[in-house]
Image 1 (cartoon, one colour):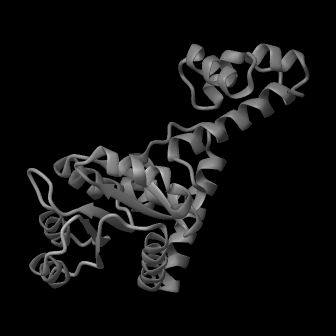
Image 2 (tube, rainbow, N blue to C red):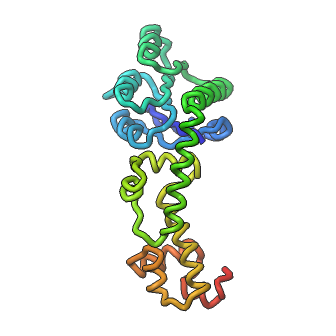
Image 3 (cartoon, rainbow, N blue to C red):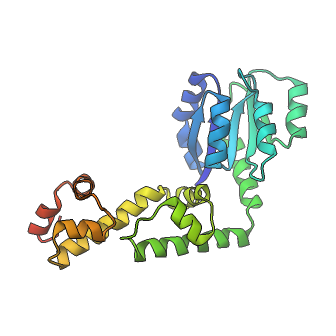
Length: 243
């Protein structure tokens, strides 16, 4: 799934986009964030690094064009779309001079939104060369293998990033884009699978199982296990690990 971020100081407009998220999903996009404050949006976009941004033009504190300009100085440059209630030739010209992708006038009909998303998808896929896709896939495979092999270790985004020479936010993007999950959720799932194996196949005390799965806090381990499997580790073991 390609990642897209929405910015509009009118919450009603953002809600309307959320209500049409099926159109985004069908075009291969996931809405990974939406913000009414452009200053907050700028920080989140820089952290989450979406493939595309749809922004309103007229906003307090920062216009959509100014938001684009601030993002354009970074190496990371998402495709940028302005959606505005105004059809101003000067704004349209400035958008494209700043390497914006498109300018649409509100209200945007479903067919126009789908057309925009399809064109964005084509551009994003063209921007990411095949070799780069393979490199990202290989990097993710290495990370996944390491996490599974050493699920008992105290992995963090920083430790994984240091080991594989990749920025923490890029790791987040890999997991979200390729696995549709987060780093922490994936790690917890691995640890829970390891815990079930130890409870089934060994006689280790539950406190020892917790430590072997990377949980130094026994009570936290029990709580996570119960949330995941709807029963305590001790009950899981007594049932022969068949839950």
